[in-house]
Image (cartoon, rainbow over all chains, first blue to last red; front, top):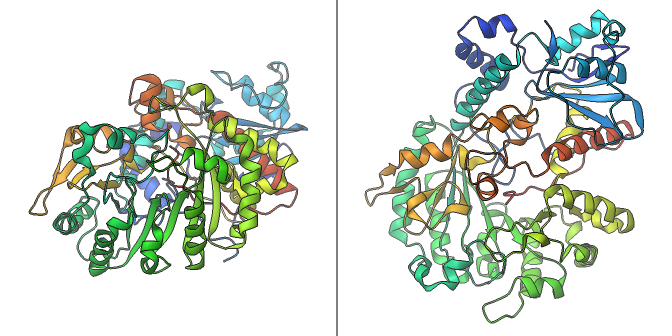
Amino acid sequence: MKKIRTSHEMTRLNGAAFRIGAEAVRSGGLELLLEATLSEVFGGDTIVGTCTEFTCNVYAPPPPPLGG
Amino acid sequence: MLRTSSYTIFVKLPDHENDVLLVHGYTGAYDRVSSGVADFLRSREVKRAAKPLYGDWSPEPESAATEAVSDGTIDLLREQGYLTELSVDEEETFFSRLTVKLHERALRQAPSFIFMPTYDCNLRCSYCYQDHMRSDCSFKHLLRSMRKPIVDRIFAALPRIEEMHGLGPQAARRRNIGFFGGEPLLAANREIVEHIVGKAFEMGDADFWAVTNGTEIDAYRDLLGPAGIARLQITLDGPPQEHDQRRIYADGSGSYERIARNITMALELGVAVSVRLNVDRTNLGNLPAMADEIVARGWDRCPGFGAYTSPVRSGNGKTDAKTTLSSWDLDRALTRMREEHPSLSVLARPDEGMRAKAQRIFADSREILPSLRPSFCSAHDRMYIFDPFADIYTCWERTGDPNVSIGKVTPEGEVELRYDQMQIWRSRTVASNPVCRRCRFALHCGGGCAILALNQNGAFNSNYCDGFANRFRTSVAEAYLEHVSGAGPARVQERVCDL
């Protein structure tokens, strides 16, 4: 579920998929950190594509059919 | 020192002075903020945000605006990525590395395979980018159909290509196989297409689709349907009179009635039919008549039917650039025309998909993973196109010239790749040119079509924007307003390629 955090000035409509702090970026090892982060966010190694040329080259799998 | 991320996208809402939407260019965050918060972020931008689509930005905020934003909001802005401690250069470097990592993952997707049974075609459309193959006899050698031994050796090679994408022999897969040409579904190609379908099923499950002009698909009746060739893209260029002037046979006669009859047949067989309308300034005005025609034929009541519009590009030297429209122009023109002709809602606008994606983000109670596009299309990661000579290409706009093929399948079924060409095609990302690398929209856009970029800028690794910044902000704003008004997400017609 979306964790709706709001202040009177801001309403979150979709959360950031990841956050990598400035220190982590500066401290080296960014490649490994990105690899781990993206695996966590998007899943494992080989991606068995479920989309086709008909759904363009979207990175994330297409959403389930509406009303299905 | 906290500053506004260079990849923060501001989306002003029409007639909503007090609220602004924020979208982050690489974290996938979407937020609604007060105009005060938007001003605060703008005051901490190193480079200026693009001009808003509706109205103007309020005057440059005073530094005192900082105090007006609460610590809690600043924390939220950091959490979502809109505020960063990275310098501009550090963030650009981070963005590049993120893009490369995303692209590496995209390269590991299961490959998609496209067969070109022939470069030949029975139509002579003036804007066709392959026109020279049929009209210049020095290309006559290309017009040979694919033969069964070639098909067999290509199928022998498929597992080797899959292995390059990390799929071992035991990996579960459902192959994605398309047909393209020339005209792939000419009646004369029937035997070879059936052979391809049969070979694919011998190897496992497969989904088939075709880009066809639809003139002779009645010869494929028994191969069409959910269990066979399940999806077709067929082009119509307007109502009968208009279409018959543009999509003509070699003798100049029109093709509309035959195609229309076949569309009805395919829909009755349960095929998903996506009608593409190539639109320029000369046939834009006929779209309401085309929409009426679709309704009159009852196609819009078939669950598998959809129709979408796509701008004609001036790529083959025969199309006057002055007659063409950008995707943005076409989207806006159709939006305006819909007010007067509601039946035009059966024709999807170019950016319908972008709007629907944003609507799902707003409507879904779950967090939606960002649909980040490190590159524009699968020519840059997983597409393999086999022509009748077993040459392998990665973009159908660049087929028929072995000099730009990415390899070939040998008579022994081995895959010989040309790494120089592979490197050119498979490494084009939004990090491979400085304009995209610094663009806040880049991972939503993918950098645009490589061929159109090459035609426009003379450089393969360059940007082709096609009005994307305007298109994205308009789509997000419209999707949000539809969401808050209670309208559900739209059904989106799938499309093959933006070209």
